[in-house]
Length: 361
Ligand SMILES: [Zn+2]
Image (cartoon, rainbow, N blue to C red; front, side):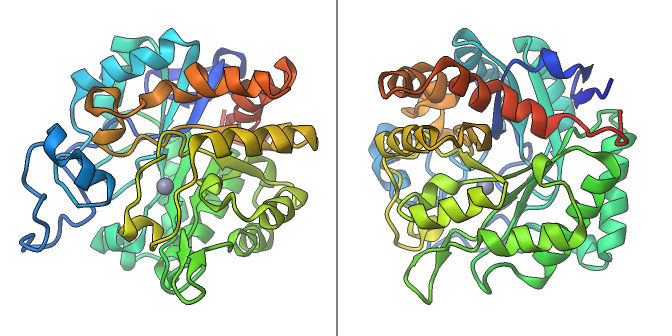
């Protein structure tokens, strides 16, 4: 059987249970974004501790070191406890190389919570790529990814179980040349290992002045490379939920779309959204229910993408359990069936994460 690699060892596909496919649990060493700036003086909230007095500014996008540093194992254990208490079993931490990924910390958190935690290999936006990556070819990056999946990350002995999140920035759309190289490498590593794979798409289109809708370019690239679309999910699709026509085109090309920013309601960072509108969580629920009525439940997954401290419950957020605790009952009340819920929470993640026959076991 093809096993899935978690930070505490391999598990069978049936042991995954309810999965949250796109989260961040731990990143050591502080924030990678903005960290290379020597001068943070134009960030008035950068060095302030998170208190209720500044949460409003943070929710409007003020950069803050503590907010961007998910480096507290104790809080991570406590926050994941809510996910487990509501029936969650498996979390994929999509913190890739260059974002202070820390597999050993993830293993301690997995042991403390009893959850399956899967760490990933991949690279976020090009500003976060370590210098040595720029010297590598796509095939060399693919070799590195395969080695992290098949042998382990550094000398930790911990194997990556999925590829992500490979991120694309906004200028130029749909990716920077360095990001295209990473996407091609990810496809080649996916073909060789059979594991799951996700892309963080460009979020906004500065020229058109709206949310970007460039997912079809990523599908073109994946098809050109020959990677498995059944193992792929496009992250953060709920940010573009105003574009139903676009989502239907993505679905009709056979990919899985990820509604994974549940809990971001009320967060409006111009840096992240380019001044566009953040959807509400009720809109996320309504859209998923509508897509289920059209029969797309085999191509939808849900998560909370907890990537900042203010998304943790302890800091006033809704944490890792919003989907299970709040969205699932609302989806039921809107006519989504138990089988459809099971597909979105269990079966689709299992299909994505399970290495296809012939891949790494
Ligand atoms: Zn992302």
